[in-house]
Length: 137
Image 1 (cartoon, rainbow, N blue to C red):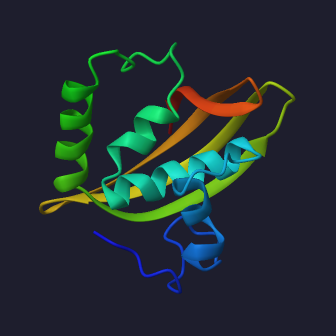
Image 2: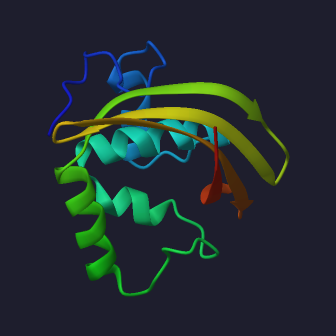
């Protein structure tokens, strides 16, 4: 899938894609964990496995140096999932560790689902990475 640059960004920011997540997908490092969270959600919509891998911390349980199988897993998930909506409830920005509580609404086939997660991010060498998350509700 492609997102036209002048379309509203699917991350829920109400900004145009070209002024929001596209800059991060094009190589600019997000300044906050929330920006990284939003850009990762949009990367799943775009089926951009490279971005997901590049922004995942080495402590994440899915992290592996075998990126081909990891890319295949991400691609399979993205191919069979419609990412409907992202809602950010709370962001706790720290200097080197931050948390973002969000709800993602998804659709897989006839199944509508949503989940709420409190995600943890770590900053390494001035760059944010997704580490892990705990499901709530």
